[in-house]
Image 1 (cartoon, rainbow, N blue to C red):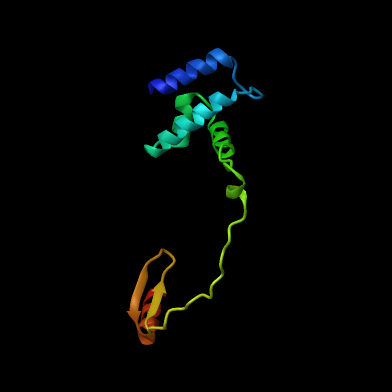
Image 2: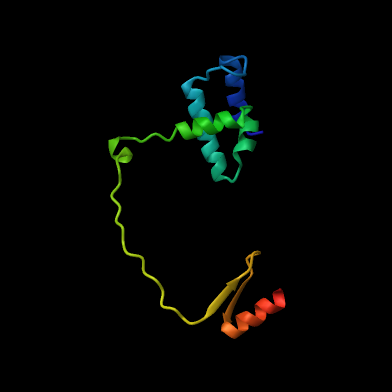
Length: 122
């Protein structure tokens, strides 16, 4: 186990004591846990594995992380301008494409080829 995670667990035990529903963690411990999660996720670790390492419920850590994403100032919270542009459609190539339910794609068939393919698959 990471030394930082061990130190976090000791600090939680010292400052919070009992765990369970209704226990309020100090903001600095929440910040420490979410910061640790961010660094661990960058290394490819999953939220559940980090929660286990920190001895926190995964749902609690997830909520803290989502709650930590507050805008820094008003400009970040404001609406952003968007533009709607007309969709451009590609020129038809005359090539038919058949995609099956399992994702298999057959390209380059003409109409007669599609008919033969469908007959063989039926």
